[in-house]
Image 1 (cartoon, rainbow, N blue to C red):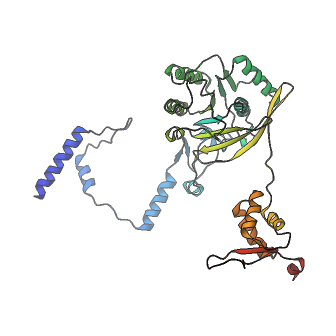
Image 2: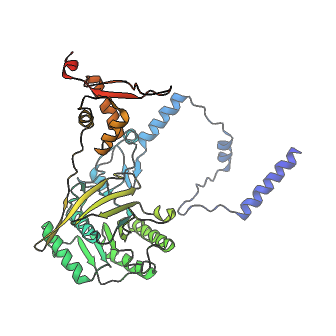
Length: 414
């Protein structure tokens, strides 16, 4: 009975592989051994049983002798900057062993803009109308062409950039470009790293337009391209998720094919904090940026999400300044956050007992985080600046509430 079932199972396996043959991966050739007897002996040979220490030692020897491949760069103990073709400013101009990489626990890849834009990515940069998307993107590209800093914070690597202008006419774009160059102290004519394309009308749903973009990329070999905007280069309403998803997939494939950064500017409504749509569509971009319009030419740049979660949720407020034919961005410094301990001391300055809930309200108004408030309360109690006791007005059993009071100078001295 067992022999029959074994024969039947073998026949089923044979029929399965007849219907579904295994196809080798492209470029893969299985090793051929002319001596069939050696194969049989190797197959029948029992595996060697190693102890835990021997396994660990064997694994360590393997890792030390095997170079690591990270995003196309071979990194080993024998590799050098010259061997890898990396300049002194490259983020990968260092030699690391496997143990060091394990300690870091991070995914390394070349970055075009440190902490913001990978060298190969597809990013959607949304913003409401009149928020200054064109100015912000243009200034960002010019910072990359001169190896500057985006928003005075993110260091860029030098590279050529192509700006596909679809939003405004070429004359208006040229005027804005000259004003921005004057504001940044750059030559608008002699900049080999900046290429603007205004006379090519794109339709990102059309294969011919994608071919046109590829032709320009192959001619100039850029590090980044910007398409301004989705609505102007797609010829349909942006809330059509299926069409937008198709465009996103095409542009992401473009970034992967040429290993460049592709940024698509897009509109979102005043009430939306970022680009909205189906989850499958929003999962395609490697990062989503947003530009929120404020008054007096100010806007907030925000990293809504990022595939590596770097600087996710971080925001920068910047003001677009226009003066005598010059335009530039000025970063608004972050206001100093009040110290939690000082807020608590001010709340207890009257010398009266105050419940914890009342202190929480004062801290919330002062924009002090609850975690910071807890740490400040603990520190002030340890220093003897304040005192605590159970709330005498609490009724019933349960978690005891506390009340706090500022200790007098005599009490602190005692």
